[in-house]
View (cartoon, helix red, strand yellow):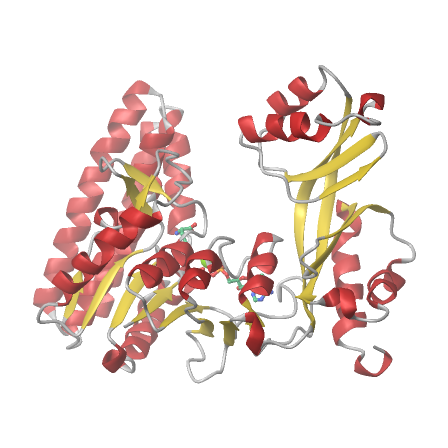
Length: 455
Ligand code: ADP
Ligand code: ASP
Ligand code: MG
């Protein structure tokens, strides 16, 4: 069996879904488990609906919900123009899901209170809409397709908006659900992103979480491959939206891909790699608009050559600088500091220390108020805002002669605040001012990847 995950742009409209269905059809002998995201931009719309409901703005939520419904009804009509029965079935499902969402949003509006639990229900609806429409369209096009509710398979804790998966529970549930749905069918389909607690309360896996859903399912069914179908020709040497002349990487290791994703490359959700590594399942990143392309294979490290593979970045981060003379010659100081981060669930990316100072970077979306307050009880704390983090990633980059020179040579005019090289030898990261980031990334990319001769 293989898992095939299609992201928002791969299911954006009738043309994209038609291409997606053709791709699935070409792989039926491998018994695909199809995982779909919401249609492009639908999750953003649902966030807007949730925010508007919290502000008790019933007029606006009704208008937005109307848009959501008509986009899906219109899509079903286009996709199944020559199969009225399937179209009617899809429209009935859309109406049912939208009616339920409408009354749920109405209740939130009445209260003017939006808990994380309610928000998870609202923002997960896009995947239910897309998976129902696509399931009907696949059946209409002659691919007998069984439907599965991901909330019966993907179990998480009760962190409603970023549930932590329970691997054992998922492995216990997924195979049974998949084989039941496969009875008499050629393929099965389910939602990415959505999950539920063991008690069945709806949760989601965090933005971009459909990739993670796909690899969790792949792990649970011992898939032979996990395919992530998106809108670019595989993993590239940098984000093509920021940098010109990027190249597609033919193969990278699990560790390199994990570091890239963790350090900002949006092409994969940062946690996607872990379940696949555990079972050594290859992940392929492929372009649904160019299905014949080779894409990128993410494989065990032994198949991968040493060398720089990519430059990634996190555009908006904070640097927390902690100063204390008590640090000198005392054991347990670092423990005390990191316990504060841990208790407040703030995750740290980079760390650098000196005798009397620790600097750490965190994503700007994290809430650091309590951390700063608690650290300030025993240290001086300064937070630097509007910073960006740039990471050069590649297997055993430490062994590359001149890497530091090559990385920093193009940055002679750029202020560098913090440098960190992980012991994993896969990642060299540093912090710059946010307004010099784009230029710095472009310069480094040019120097490392566009200047073959000079490297
Ligand atoms: P999907 O909706 O299919 O999940 P995403 O938008 O989440 O797609 O991810 C694909 C996007 O990731 C690409 O369009 C590209 O702009 C961006 N991206 C960022 N860094 C990279 C990279 N190193 N290689 C490829 N794509 C990247
Ligand atoms: N639809 C969700 C999002 O936009 C999950 C995903 O697409 O991976 O974040
Ligand atoms: Mg994505």
